[in-house]
Length: 180
Figure 1 (spheres, rainbow, N blue to C red):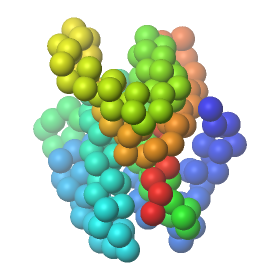
Figure 2 (cartoon, rainbow, N blue to C red):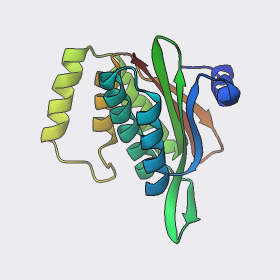
Figure 3 (cartoon, helix red, strand yellow):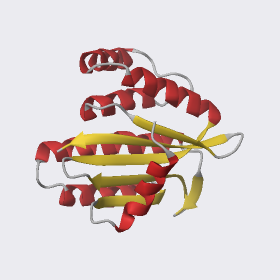
Figure 4 (cartoon, rainbow, N blue to C red):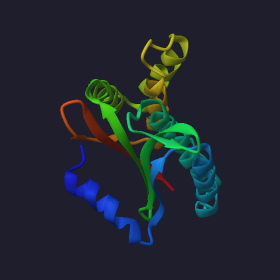
């Protein structure tokens, strides 16, 4: 788990030249298209790395879309709100996302990340195959599957931090390392 200081450090690093993408707001199709273009334009040194970053981006944006309890009316639609950052850390990219979730969602997310973080790559691939074969749960939109995919793509443990907002909600951030 990362500390409050690390979260604040990531949020204030925006002026740093290493910050490739930093966004907090409604997750709309237009915004996501712009960020997709930015990623493709900024990560040009290795096409395989760019594809991995794009795949992680898609999976984590879907988590924001499906699970963020913070909503905003935007362009006549109700949109989920979250944050995304990609930082160039020289030998790897650090992808961070976050959004407000329910306390019940917090426990489920922590449990899922704990299970994923205690598996090796072969075990993760097996779990991914099992996820594909199982029906999606009543209250789930398949986020566990996406997190498994993110862990496979990254090759590193998922770095999760939960900050309690109040008795009903928490804000979580998830950090993912993607080697260059």
